[in-house]
Length: 363
Image (cartoon, helix red, strand yellow):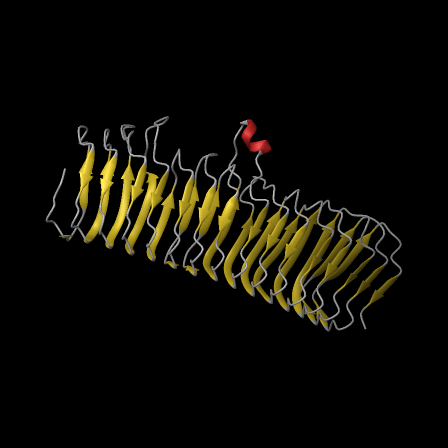
């Protein structure tokens, strides 16, 4: 199918169940006001839009399990997608095979939303993308290895991604996530899951603000040993739980958490340090850990709840804490000193432990 002189389409470019069509080529097309919509294109193996610069969106669907030939989407000159790139394939037939492995849009700068859930996807690279107005969601099978958007500056909605062998992630310039950062290790029963080095490090060196950070999602586990948010200054909520290999956590620039900061079950992480944090609505630490130090030198206000099964924490000190609605500390052994020298008011102060507590400083 070829339209050699067509330069613009005002609304949708829609093809459905054209089972004999193997290729689409529109060599002069520069603009599509609506969406590229493809559904159940059984033999479609190639699309060619060599000078297309702007379109409304992309929607691929495989509701009857008959879109079995298209392996790559390529848009060499595409700059702007005003709507959504939806590669979730909607209500794909159970067990249907989707051969699509990648989308190449090297010049793409702006997209409203991005959703990728593809059976056979192995990489997603947008080298020029700088802005996603809504969500950036990638949830694929254990073949997915590379996710890279090195020029991306801001995401207005959520950033969610995962995959059992995902090992290369680059969001080196990302400074703002308006919604939620959510990273998960998709469950799989194959040997690949237990042997692959899935995300040994989670690094967002330029991130300044996030509405919410959840690591990991749900009950899934990550084999991550290092988390770096070295520029993060403010977040709505931060939850880090059950990262069994985590040994280093960098939140050194964090000053404000408007909601809760929750840390749970990091058996290899020995010390928590938040040197710049001044305000948190609630700080919650629970679980069995080997923690030997908690350092909040600048924290002025926040609710505090510590319930830790550890024998390595001799002292709990919050040297700058002035106000807290509630302080609850429960440790089984060894704690011998609790210090809140500047505390002026607390709705509740409860300390319980099975060790030799000898001093409480409330000067």
